[in-house]
Amino acid sequence: MDNHLNGRARARSLGVVVGGLPTGPLNAITDVEGVLVGHTTIDDGADLHTGVTAVVPRQLTAGRRNLPAAVYAGNGYGKLVGSTQVDELGVLESPVVLTATLSVFRAADALLTYLMGRRPDGISFNPLVGETNDGFLSDIRRRPVAERHVLDALEGASGGLPGEGCVGAGTGTTALGFKAGIGTSSRRQVVDGAPVTVGALVQANFGGVLTVRGVPMPVGELIPGARHHEQAGGSCMIVVATDAPLDARRLGRLARRAVFAMGRVGASYSNGSGDYAIAFTTAPPRLPPLPDEALNPVFAAVMDAVEEALLNSLFTATTTTGFRGRTSHAVPYDRLPGTDGRTALA
Figure 1 (cartoon, rainbow, N blue to C red):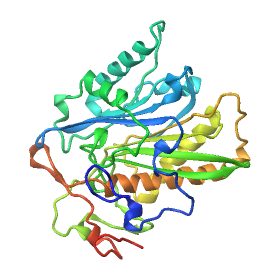
Figure 2: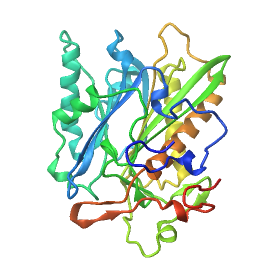
Figure 3: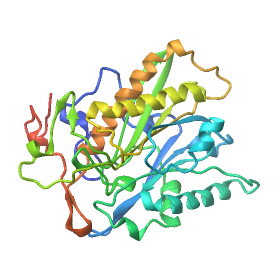
Figure 4: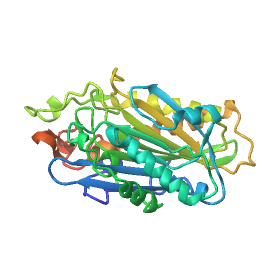
C-alpha cells in the first residue's frame, strides 16, 4: 500500500517484509480498536517544517478515566512531559501528543485545555507529551506550534490509515542519515487462544546507519556525493498500543522491546538521542492480565511492528530542503539492493 499523502511507498510495497506475523487490515496502530491518530503539519516551504501528531485512545472519551500504561526511557536525553506519573501510577490519562523539542511545553498546555474541556469537574490532569528535535530542517527557536495546532490534531484524529513520512510531528525529522518522519505498523497474534493486535507509531529522528533486514545501507553508498546530516543525537518516540489484557508492569516489558527494535534498523543509541517508548492497552479492565509466560508472541509482535514502522517512516518521507538551506534526502528506492525502481529486497 502506498502512502496516501505523497505517493511514496511503504516497506511492504517495496518487498521489504519484516517477520512472518500477519498485520492488521491497515498495517497501522489504528488496527487496535478505538485508537485514532491525527496530524497537524506546519510547512512553509522554507524555514518551518514541524507539527503535531496525536494518538487518541477513544476509550478515554467513552467513560474510562485511564488505561493501563508504561513508559520506558532507553536514553533519557529528552522531554517527555507527564512520564513520571505514568511510571508511578501505571496509567495513561490523556492522548499521547508528539511535537518538536522547543514546542513540547506549549503542546502540553494545549493538551491540558483539551482535557479540561472534557472533564469540567477535574482539578488534576496528566497530559503526556513527547518530542524529537527537528532543528536541522526547521527553525525550532520560533516555536510555531500553537494551541490550535494541537487541538486540530486531537479533534481531527481518525481511525483510518494515518499519514506517514513528512507529516505532523515528523515533518522535519531525519533518521539514519535520511529524511524520516512518522511511521506506523501492526501485527496480529493468537495468545492463550485469543486474538491480540499490537500497533506501533514512531516519530523517527535518530542517528546510525540505515539497516534493512540486516543489510547496512550508508547514505554515502545510496547517494554518492550527497551532503547529509551527521546525526549525533535527535531522539525517537515510539507509541505502542495493544488490545491484549496487560498490567503496567507487563506493558513496561513491551515498551522495552519497542526501544530494542530500533537496533534492528541501525540505531546508534547515542548520548544525545532521547529514545522513549510508551505502551498502553485498550483491553476491558475486567479481564485478567496475560501471564508472563504467555508474552513471547506479544514481544515478537512489538519488535516486528516497531521495526516496520521505523522503515515506513523513512520510505514514505520525501527529500526536504529547510532551515538555512539544509537538505535531507529521501531513501532512493532504485539504489536499494535487489530493487528495480519499485521493488526492493524481494
